[in-house]
Image (cartoon, rainbow, N blue to C red; front, side):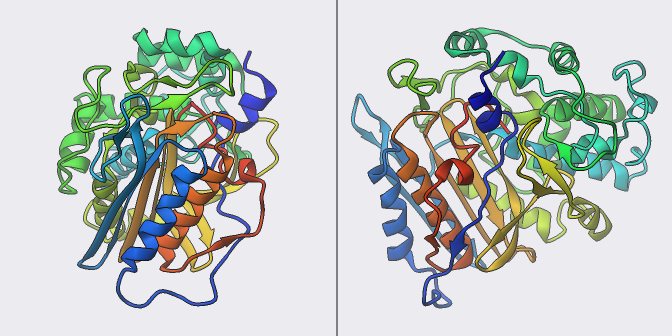
Length: 399
């Protein structure tokens, strides 16, 4: 079994942008490029190997990078590097499901049994409960992350969707279907991928590529076909809380992520995606309203903190008010992607070091940079407890 520390930090834990206050002055109407680069440079100074970031505000764009993509070779990061975005994949999947709801192919409050007979033992579970994590099916990550050696096993193993669902069911339920707060579970979005397979009569990854990724105009976002990332990409470093020296996990069989967390993208493509989504180019206003209807969710069983989760979309409280997006992480990489509610401004960033002692200051700097990027302010962190702020960045599992 995963340790209590892993369960608390990694299994469905969310970044919580709390305890951040705005600076004494806000940025002007133009992007403060010098300040954006300055705050990004603080990330590697705090122990993270490297970071990259992009901001879009109307027609204005900025992108930057800091630190190293390859510690051994001394190769610097570049802004346009491909990056595993983990559970931001869930927002793409939820968008695809809501497209099907818009077309009358899926009823959000219909039981999953109606579409996938016999898959889930509790027939009370609905499609909506999968989307907002209130069905309380166990998270298969709990069964996969069992210690340092499990990372190497996962790296090369090919998992099927059915196997991942069985693992999640084997973990056991965290509550009754519909009960709030819900409990974050990657298993839910594997089931949603299987539902898309059924109702679209094509593999979910193909449907999402055609009707979400391509429709949003993304050219650098895809489900990986091999364990290798295309160039340019950073390495992905973790030591599993110091269990071994920093190791590169950028080559990885992402079948364990699937429709819960396998997508590869760039920070600029993520900005394009959230702009397309929140300005109504991918789903209509009625579906956007459904997506932004939130319920309280805990990161996982036994973790008391809650956050506001919609249908594949998270509401974050920041110094400039509520913003929307998602965060995600895989082994060695973590990502944040935020958008204002009107889709006018986006900020996305990634780091290439997770679950490693001594990177807390870098993680804190990452939050400060990204919140400042979406708000146009320079927030100052009041709290020093970065594990409370950056649970996902500390975790090698996707969310």
